Image (tube, rainbow, N blue to C red; front, side, top):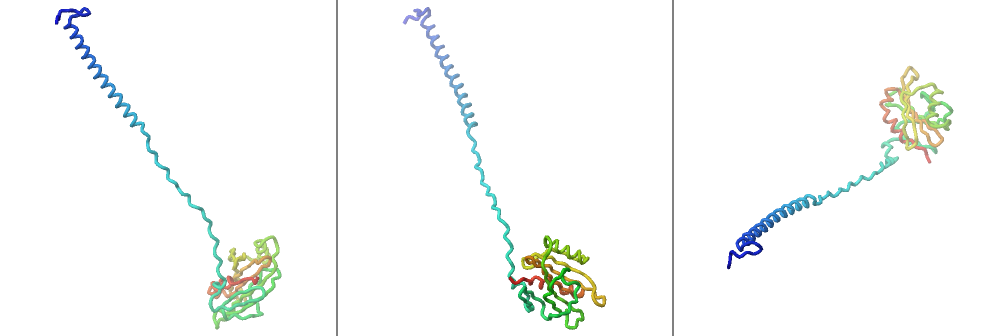
Length: 237
């Protein structure tokens, strides 16, 4: 082979060198391209990983408590109001129970009968704290029609007309009927201090007076029994 022969103005050796340089450049180009593509792919993969959707927590269902109304109190059976051994006093109009040993009497030695007006005295009982006691204890029941606009106005009018102020005045109920509990103080006979527990009970348009009168010491000794007796009062329907 003639190495000195020229092709395109270059010898065979020069063409070989040029071809070798071209191969080297091609290889370098491939290497650089491979490196560049590797970086691009790595960046793309990292962006894809960063852009991966975040799993959102599932919302928790909160149950709102159901509102329930307060049940109405269960009525107390009437029989449970009556203590064992007590005596019953019943008429065509009402029923009430009291400690045993009290007798009907025509003597009315109380601070007041009703609260003024013209109440009808329907029951008067007399007893004593002990068999040897000279102080008498009275239970009286009377009634009259209610007048005025309402129950509170009626009682206020009666107290004003009598010119008295009770020691205690508390709204109450007697067997579901509206009532007002009053306590009065006074003196009777030979300067005996007495107290009087009065329940004013409204049944429809009729006002009832339940009154327990006793010497002050006997009064507080028997107050719980007076309260129990008053709770047994009920109008016959």
